[in-house]
Image (cartoon, rainbow, N blue to C red; front, side, top):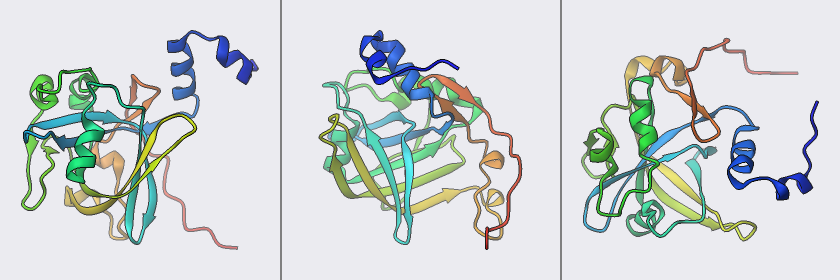
Length: 203
């Protein structure tokens, strides 16, 4: 076993350190986050930091890194208070990954990456038509983290569009049947193979 200490982190090359810390915790769900800019243009961002907050009310959190000048996603969310999360499938993961590029604010990642925006009544933010799970959210709370300048957005789920054959009778969403992929670090993508579902634990 190799031991790497906090003192070692400070001596590492920046990209090496980012890859190490981003991938050491293993596989994470990855999503395309849809917003619109101030001109009504559809935009996309790749996020791998979505986490469950609660089911009643239905809340999801997303961690946003300190924003770059050309990164408009957090600004769009703060202005419109609406955004979407869309799963990524093997058939378009390379296009989805390209959405992480630093495009100019007037460039739509949908168009640049060859993905299709779709809108549902009453929701201003775009969904990804190619996704099998589409989640609409509105901002419930914003939490700035002084420790490293990141921001957590807690969003309330206002709607879910999903292929009905991937929801079990007990409400379980079968991510394998949905075709959802995962990511380790920032750029290594994986398909999912289920081991099995276990019963609710009791004493």
